[in-house]
Image (cartoon, rainbow, N blue to C red):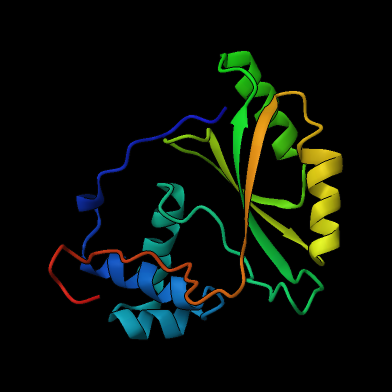
Amino acid sequence: MGVTVPVHPLSLDAIDIAILGALQEDASIANAELATRVGLSASACLSRTKRLRENGFITHTVAVVDQRRVGLGITAFAFVTLAGHGRRTAESFLRRIQETPQVMECWHVTGRADYLLKIVAPDIDSYRDFLMDTLVQTEEVGHVETQVVLKAEKRSLKLPIGKREGEPL
C-alpha cells in the first residue's frame, strides 16, 4: 500500500493554480504557451511546473482516450461487498483488482458495500462474462451489485482548484 502524503492546498499561489488549471485542460501545451498564459517567463514557468511535479501536485501526465473508439462501449459501476472484513481479505482483494485491467478505478467506500469499482468492457455480454467468470469468482467477494451506465452526462478530469465555496466554478 502506498503512503499518503498530506498536502495543504494553501501552499499553492495563484500562479501555481493557473499552471495546474491550464495543464488540466491540455497537458501537451508547450511551456512557452503555458508561460504566456500564466504571465511568467518560460524558465520561471518550467521551474514552477517542475516543482509542482516534485511536490506531488502533478502525479501523472496522460492522454485521455475515447473508450468507445477503442471498442470499450460499456461502463459499469459495481458495488462490491467482501466476504470477510479482515485486513488480509481486503489486501488480497485489492491485489487481484490491481491485476485486473477491466477495473479502471477502485474506491473504498462507506455504506452497504465495501468497494466501488468502475469497469469497462466492449459490450454487455463481455461485462457479464467478466462479472461471472472473474469478479464473483474471486474468493474475497461476497456480493456484487452492478449499475450499468446508459450515458455519461458529464465527465471531467479537471479538479476545481482554487475555487472556494460560494464562488462560481
